[in-house]
Length: 295
Image 1 (cartoon, rainbow, N blue to C red):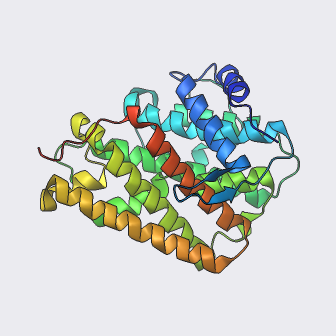
Image 2 (tube, rainbow, N blue to C red):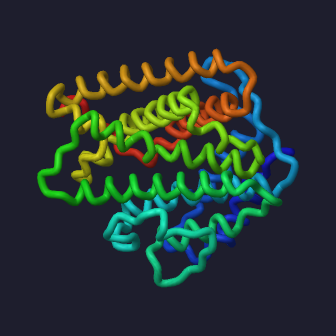
């Protein structure tokens, strides 16, 4: 089934009517990345990675919805911090029902997303993984927000990477694909090999995003970026080179693990997500302020 991007965007815009500051960009990002998961993508090297396919239009829309929600809520923490909770929320604060009410934005919006999924019976473990991964992602966003507000707060590179493992949104995205496609990946997430692959994918994507977004964060005075963490020791150009080597190392480790896994839906998902990140950062340059390495 081919994805009609314009149709999906229109449906998401109608659905997200009560989401403050939800834009067509959020909907478009969600629709395009959902299209990559469903239809596949050609890599920079010219290799075609096949998609997972879709038995129904509603699966495409539900997947696009979750991705658009991730972009939107991340932007809310960055651009509209007053809309979110000032404290660190816990799993017990969330549930799988939602409405546009007076609770914290991240609580009611997560409930609305889950409530909107049009899936048949799913294992309880699949729903638990979806909710837990959503809460972990939101907690990481909250920690970034609280840290960026702190006067004089300076990350160590190790602390930043530990937070980056979950703030990349990869665990949540894998949980969403597993839930919608009924892949039962919740039964495998504690396997050491799987945890290692998710970690390498998360960090490869996080570090790539840091490189392209460092100019924005430098302008905003936000120190939650690995390039800005390392520039104190290496200078700006040295920090970019260091982070790129680290990113490439995690990507190589991931690709090696995926090759050894053989035909496997998790391997396919990881490859599609990685290439989707490369596509996004290559095509959405207008979101980012170029970093002046000579400064």
